[in-house]
Amino acid sequence: MNEIITIKNKPNWIITIILPFGLIILIFIMLVILPFTSIKNTYLLSALSYTFSLIPFLAIFILFLNIWLWNTFGKVILEISPEKIKVTNKNKLFNKPKEYLKSEIEKIFIFDFGIENTQYYTRMNYLFSNSNYSIIIQKAGKNIRIVDWLNNERAKSILEKINR
Image 1 (cartoon, one colour):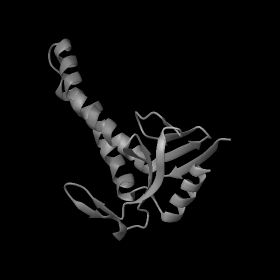
Image 2 (cartoon, helix red, strand yellow):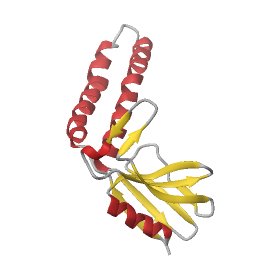
Image 3 (cartoon, one colour):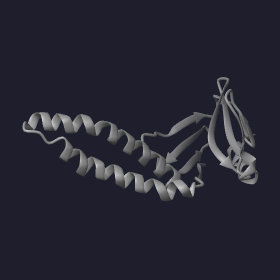
Image 4 (spheres, one colour):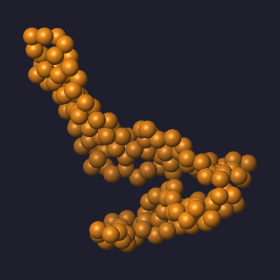
């Protein structure tokens, strides 16, 4: 029996509102300003100049589009079957589904990121939200975060469904 759980990403409304303006500006630069600045007497050099000047703007556009899509419309879809767990990040560019066999998983647990310590900083996530919990799979000695930023009740219910 397969069970499908959909977890909606909590959007950051500042990114959701402001980033489309940046995307529109980048489209304007790529389609209007760059062609006019690359026009020269020879067509081959104009085309090469336009192509090489377009590459960095296109890369930034794709990066911003990926961030905006995931922030605004992102979902994590968990497909739980008796033999595996499939994790799909919906509306994220260049991302393929990941499958974890239950026989290879050592442990599945909830981790609280209320206070997040790294080598460079300590961040207190509990100040602004109570959605600090992640569901983590331990596989071959590595911790893999499959779902992030859940509240405690939602994390416990998802872990209960996974462990069934």
